[in-house]
Image (cartoon, rainbow, N blue to C red; front, side):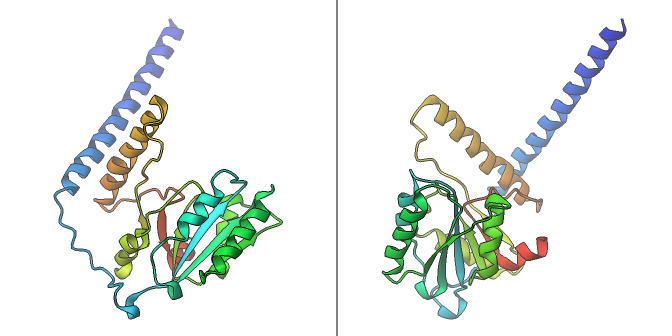
Length: 231
C-alpha cells in the first residue's frame, strides 16, 4: 500500500511539472505571436558613415577541425566590412596536423591585406571559453563576433547585426542558425526542426518581453564591455 502511494505521489508530481512546462511553452508561443506585430523602430548605426563604424573582432575558436577548417577560413575571408575596422582571430587549440595547415592558410589570407591572426595555446585550460578569454584580452574590436568552426556566415552578416549596437543598452545580438544538411536524412530534418523551434519560439518569445535569452556560443556579437561587466 505504501509503495502504491509513493508511485502515485511521484507520478502526480511529474504530471504537475510537465503541466507547468507546457504553460511556460504556451506563454512563449503567445509572446512570439505578439512579437510578430511589433514594428521595429530600433536606432541603427549608419555603417556608410565612417565615423559610426565600430571596430569588430571576429573570434573563431577551433579544435582539430580537419574537415571544415579550410571551408571556414575561405568563407570568413569573404565577410563584408571595412577592412580597417575588422580583425579576425583564429583561436586554435588543435593538437593534430591542422595547426600547421591552418597557420599556412592564415598566412595566405593575411598576405591579401586581411587582418587575421593565428593564436595557439600550450595550456588548454577552460577549453573553448579559455581560448575566447585569451583572445579577448588582446582583441582590437569593441564588438566581438563569435563563430564555431562549422558555421558559415553570409557575407553581409556584420552589416545585418552591427547596426543594432547604436543603442548603448544592447549587449549582445544573437542570430538564428540555418542548416546546410537539413534534407540529408530524416534525422537531420528532425534536428533542424528542433533548433528552428528553439530560435523562433524560445528566443523571440523571451526577448520580446525583455527576459534573458541564452547565448548559443556561436553566431552572435557581443559588446566587449558587456562581457567584462558580466564577469
